[in-house]
Image (cartoon, rainbow, N blue to C red; front, top):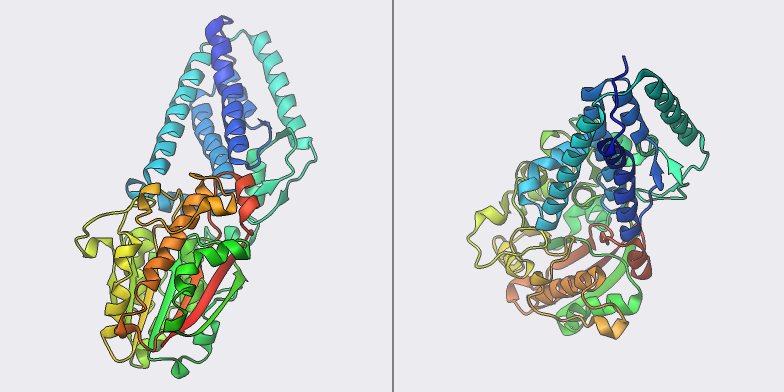
Amino acid sequence: MFKSLCVGNHTWLSAFIILVLPNLLFFLAAERLGVFRPFINIDYVVVLLLILVGFRTTALLLLAALFFIDALNITGQIFPILNLVDVLYLSRFWAVAPPLYQWIVVILGFLLIIKGWAILRLSAGIKPLQGLVLTVAVTSAYIYGLSVEDEPQRKIWRMSGFGPIGSQTMYAVGAHTQGFVMRAGLDAAALVSASQLPATRLWHAEPSQLSHKLVLIVVESWGAVDEPIQNAVMAPLIRQHDQLSWFDTGRLDFQGATVEAELKELCMATPPSFNIGRIVEGFDNCLPARLSNLGYYTFGMHGAAGLMYDRTRWYTRAGFQETLFFEDRLWGRRCYSFPGACDVDMAPYIAEGLAASEKSFVYWLTLNGHSPYDHRDVIFDVFDCGEFDIESGSQTCRNLKLQTQFFQALANLLDDPRLAGAEFIVVGDHQPPIFNKDEFDMYFEEHVVPWVRFGVR
């Protein structure tokens, strides 16, 4: 039975909040970020339809779901978080997320509350004839929106080619038919083989023939840029050429998240979901496990809390005999891009790990290069953005400063005699998330990460 609807100002305000406000805010956000979204997400008319026929509670629940999907489709074009199961898993770590991300969630929650209030006001009642007319109107609008044939051209998680009207729900369903996105919701108990080659593939091929001192570093958000910029980023290491017995660098294709990059390099595998703590099989072929069987001491470290992605669990399963996370030490300071220890304070533990045994394998996942690249993490500034006409204060500038700082911290270690004879592989985990796509396209290559291999005299 149709409810009666007051035709006063509250009605129009409520309708505006339900239909116009979310489309306007999300479209402006997409424009600001340089990502893609239809100007009108036709899904919201279903909420109005449910109100008109009296299903107020269902309308509230659907509104929350559509709001979530809309936000996920936008953020999913910047960050590789594409699956509801993984989002729910990652929500456990909201309390330790960067403050910027926490504020975004709070603001979205506040907007959702406002929209819920609008539904309650709008459902005050409507005359049967008015309800029938509005029902036909919104239903027709929805059918038209779904019939618009303007399929977006989709890359791994960035969508383009949207028409003015479309369904974000339909786009989300389409995204779940691709690659890792389709696998990410499975509750599997085993790793699967990686389809993308790691920088460590030669180490995996002949682990018994390797140096007695091995260091693998996966660098957070180290992206592929033009050669002059990349040389400036690596300049602190390159200037230490007298300490290097050999040096090689290159690039490799990779699409995925940090934890996928870790498992690619360590195990030549990929996870079926982000909830890796529940995965118990497939770790026997991981590099630290194989090296441990060959008599190596294996040490893994990361500056964030060990509960992130359940690293305290799966690092052990992968073969690390000892680990170091943020909670394992009292640090003299903390860093902010992602809460945790500062990379410049973590770097000296490489030498300690190598000195722990005659044969040692040290693994380090860096942290401070994490988006949004907090300027407070630039402890010593060794990259000049102005030299390359990169806007000071931009995300790109801050990212490159943090990456150069990492290489400076690494170069500072090379005089330590405990590193003598060590072989290093340094590789980016994934392209850096840059909130503005136009800025990203100006400087970075999509789905490509750099690597460098070198030996210490």
